[in-house]
Length: 105
Image (cartoon, rainbow, N blue to C red; front, side, top):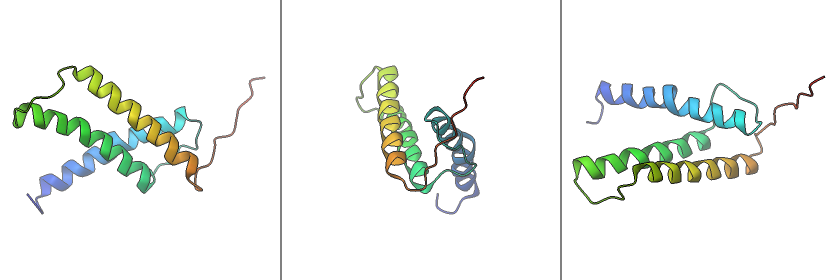
């Protein structure tokens, strides 16, 4: 599969259409500056999140391995881990800037 155009297309599509949007929304929710380009660390964390859920499906449907059948719980737990990691990564990053606080008035 190495070098096939469909692989580059798939990885690019997941990164641009899914992972970057997830990171942008997490930044917004955390009160961080929403930049166009995610950091390398944020992107790797998002890939780990995506890969865990994806591989759950591979193990269940392709390998026919036993998995925890509560898929909603698995996704919820994976999301909790991702969000905790996202918060930790951005707390310790010197490049993170907080969005200005807007006061209604």
